[in-house]
Image (cartoon, rainbow, N blue to C red; front, side, top):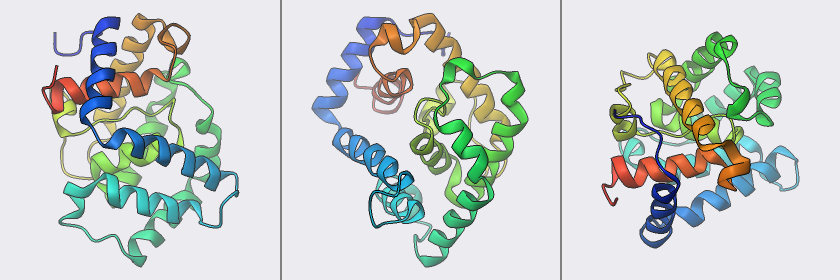
Length: 200
């Protein structure tokens, strides 16, 4: 089955491979810290400015065909403003309490973000805004989980399905308490190393 739950030793192997071979590991830690500081107004940069810079760096393949400029930052500012209350309420949530009641909200939110950032950039942005609730994916990972990506603006239902699968995996693994760290980060490292890079 393509979306079976990995074993703990597979998560650990992925962690070791990711730390050894993937330069983005430090970037991820820096990104989550910067977003947190911006949300708490503890740095001079706005949240939209931080996200614009981070996504420009993190989503380089998509950015070859799409410029990150003042207009893109304005689009991100508009998204953050339009969804401010919702994003604030979701930030502290974990995938554990994700349910069918979230379907319409998740699908609409994701589609709004992906129209501006693409389906991979949208997942990355939402994950940075709520790192224990929104999982990460890329095209290879989505395909491996049988939710191959469509054009931007049409993937909300697919992302919702992916969230359901990831929640099941987190439950199977015993959640953050048993894994000892954010299960979404652990599963993303596994998916990235296994499905995207084929390192393990």
